[in-house]
Length: 522
Picture 1 (cartoon, rainbow, N blue to C red):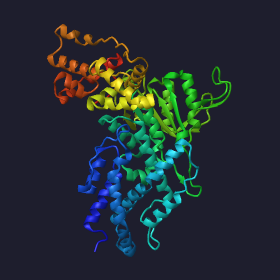
Picture 2 (picture 1 turned 60 degrees about the vertical axis):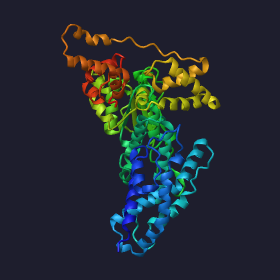
Picture 3 (picture 1 turned 180 degrees about the horizontal axis):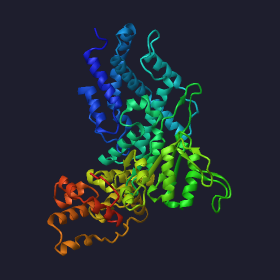
Picture 4 (picture 1 turned 90 degrees about the horizontal axis):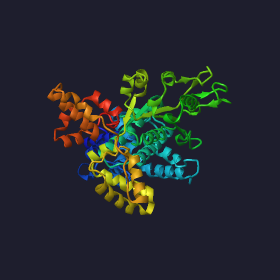
């Protein structure tokens, strides 16, 4: 007789699928539905800070845990009674179910402790680790049999803490109840854990710092928030004897805004310098690469502005993890994580000879694109009201609702229909501040467009009808920022618009400021 019944096997398989799912994708809801059947509570897949309650959204998780808490003691008793009957498949299902059950059992305590630490209202020691270690051993380390897990309690405690920390970093940093915002949250989760959470837990947790993350997208779309969420969500080993984590990533996030510095200063900030290496270098100085510990992160914002000679040094750093300070030849090793961001289309910068192709391919091992505000509104029109309410609360506090009402009324009556929001979230926030102070907002003047030049050849009769249509589709797509928006304006099928867009012409429009910096908009 098998250790698990058919019904138990199916349920544990479903639980393992839930445990592996990206919490910001629809796959989680699908896995929970498979596990719970008729008991599943439909909640949607867009986890968004300003409209959702995380505890309410965990209703299905709590139902799964209730079933596990009732079912698992009997399964454990059978495993203890018949250890020779435990196959690898059964052991894997059982371990996965225990991991899911214990994570949710301790999840409220992790969340409370992380919140207390952010506010400084806690002691330095994680005392409940002892209780967790007892549970872990009781479920997975039989007294007279082989362990049912290869993972130690301190490692799993560190992993659970990282899961809780990462979820809340993403949930609280990336706002917007739209499909593009949900996809962005899911992409950040993958940057932290990859698409395979089991593989990450086994091995990759110690290797993710070796991967460079490149964040691209228009200005004002939260690229630094994405970088910070990734940096502050890294795996941190736990010292079970001292009841402490080995480090705090929050204290080791080092942003460098390249466009605000001269080439010499960028090089010095990044690599450090030795006294006398250039005018004004009165003493030795450590750069952020040298100061960054293994669990820290250096964030290079606007990397498209990096001078060619520094691009060479950065390429060598990524390839070898070794660098030298300005004015020194002694090698130093960088142990932290590198994150970069740009609002430029680097492929076009490569074509112009202003960005190294080999550096680009070293940077894009992990690529995230942040969506424009216009694209979010096109896909989910209600997102504008949600964002206005959220930002108004942050700006005006208790008067946030009143400010939100004034702002929504102004936007809907005074701004053009389908206003492009070229400044994205940053512009929306400033719009609300203007309305708070002056009850009005004047958008910046639009740049002069050279779009009519696109059709000069048509006036000469040298363009085919298909070429005219292609150029017009490209121009409308450039203005709207999404295929859906362009299709609506042109009264054409989205797939036809996408097929007609000329990518080379789109790059030209971006350089001339006619188009936003999005690539691959849906």
